[in-house]
Length: 93
View (tube, rainbow, N blue to C red):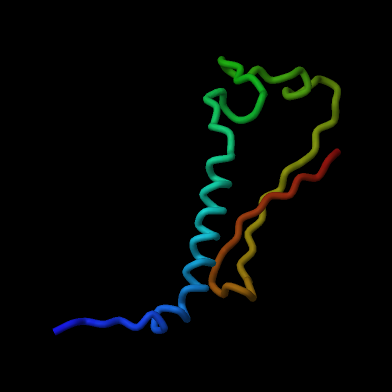
């Protein structure tokens, strides 16, 4: 018993296979063309070790008026019924 496969049966998909191979080769070429990742962190900026020190404007200053922070709770959500939302509002002096 001989198994005979007609060449005409494989032809309709040959264009699809060619397109798939060309796309795979193109994607592989793009992946190989990229530079290797560096170990220096995120971007060209140096990573400064140690604790962060706040500037002089980060702490309260005598004689400067202070604003007020009021806290509120929203109980009537129309989008998500039954949910509570806590929020704060800062009012500058």
